[in-house]
Image (cartoon, rainbow over all chains, first blue to last red; front, side, top):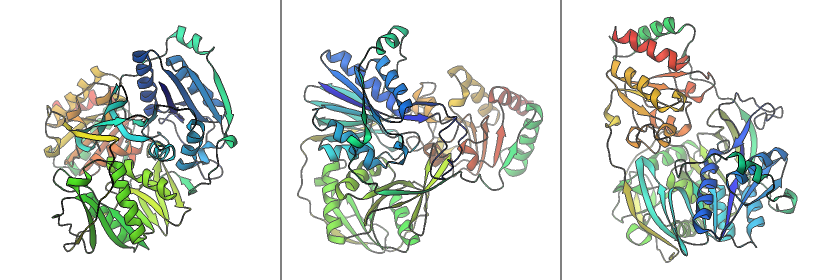
Length: 257
Length: 303
């Protein structure tokens, strides 16, 4: 079985973001980057499947600048067999169709049976790459899975809907699955595995060798939204702030009298 | 400008989000037609034509079949934009349709100004202004972003279905057992987020809820971490609430959480990070270490 996992390096969402000097994106300097949280579940599920099957190879692919190799190395340390880095210093300028095209062009002649992706990235959150990829490759696709079971030539998945309801779906291979938070419990790489990962294959491909698609959506401007008008900010000593908050609640709500 | 509005029929009725799509079409001054997979006797409160594909044939969930139907309708009606809700149905189907049409897709639209769309990014800490670069565009709209619009009963037109997809089999729904309280009826909700740090610290939040005679709620990461079960979850995939008072403790304010609680009458956020997107909706933002502040507040309330 051939398995592909697509991962993205994103900034820590707790960061204090600034807008880049061209006004188009966030300033990427001084940020801490990590694996997109949704993709961690994709990596974990792929590694579990490999462990269950024995005879499977799992490849992790990531698109981005040089630093993107860090997340591929981490995926290798978790148990992925091989890494592919698509070097692209301007990956943030690509729209979801372009990103899906890069992946599709890499994957088209490799007969992957299952492709796992996060359901969305934490920065862009378009949730488009998985389903578009399925259109480009002609694969089946189920999004937002919170349950997974492999059974010969098909997989049984649970797809998360609104209000705590899940849809049970059985789908034939080859299939693209986008992973929702909580799909599994993500493991941490162990020190011996981190050492082993250093010897694993990690190939780099230039983005120009895989991309033949113009953007379908134009980015005009990025900005920081205004906070709620009239919202009150309380800070200072816990004791005094608590008193202030209680008096506000008494004045503005009918909850405290 | 013409919009094709893709409604959703679930749990035996037309989902209210359809009327937000109608409100959006009205806002951009577009003429519109609707489409949904539903029973043929539905009665959308909409001043126009709604094409209905029979749900007993097209099934609740079968993306390939639903995409095929919409593609045919796009050919027939030639809309400039196809509009979905940014829901589990919309984010699954819209990209497939956009790819098939080679059209630009813009996800999670929260506002529009003269053909330029506003979308949140970086967990709603930032915004982007974007526009499609293609003759047609596919949009998904953030729930609650556009005011719903209802009017007369729609003119229903059955829409034929011929395709089949034997690759995918929908096997029914699994509904979570309700073990917690019905948060939709609570007047006071105190919710714990990832910022509480560890499971044991939930008790600090629970004590505050008790002191305010309110119910305990949670954001998704708390449920995913197994600190509370999913019946406590507020947000898109949990419960949508509108209490008199909502206190968010250590919740950054991911858009999925904001959607579930922003109709609360009065919102207090307790968080160390003043830039957290929860500040966008908070009436009072307490910038504090919650492990220090909440016990202090609780003890003053119970004195």
